[in-house]
Amino acid sequence: MAGFADSPQHQLVRLFEAGHFHDVLKRAKSLNLRLSQEPTAAQIVAGALFQLGEFAKAAELLKQHQAAFDADASFLSLYGATCRRLGQLTTAKDLFSRALSIDPKSPQIRNNFANLLIDLNELVDARKILEDLLAEDPDYSDARANINRLEFRERQISTSQVLTETLSSTL
Image (cartoon, rainbow, N blue to C red):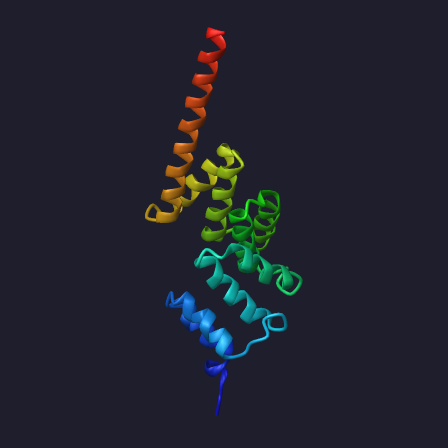
């Protein structure tokens, strides 16, 4: 008797949670899943594609199912992170904002949103989010990495401004 534990989605989730992203893709293919008609399986496969750096393929799957998951914060966050990786920063900001309106306390969504804000040079807002995350959990390594990235960006901007001022004064 096959139960939920044997469902294709559950098989994919187990592989995904174990970090076997290539196996997620292989299993989805071997199960002959019609990802265009199976939104949950498509989201899991898109997550695996994201983890493997196949952002365009992940975005294609996510776009197909956006209506089905429009109120799902984790879906919107994954889609936002995917769009960020593809340089679609305005779309990513919209998706993260919607995800945060659904789940404003999620550390992962807040951290990913801060990462996007760094890309957009909205450094004050990014710093506030990251400092709040680290105040809540000083061991949150992703937030710590992003605050380091933020500080590096601030140094880049500061150095660039000094060089611009120096060049302007010599001309």
